[in-house]
Length: 65
Image 1 (cartoon, rainbow, N blue to C red):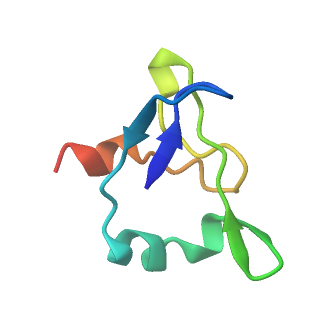
Image 2: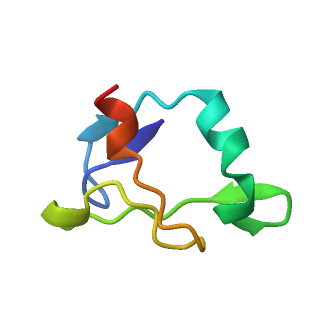
């Protein structure tokens, strides 16, 4: 996944997320129609925690594996 660091910037985070992680947590995501809508926290203590869905999934933990 590519995540823009700041709006209107050309700096990005690159997140490598296994498809299995997404499938295992589908019920915790926020959907717009049939698409997952992600909104990651940018606060240092909760960086890459998905805030829109009900699961508060931590995507940063996926990067450490």
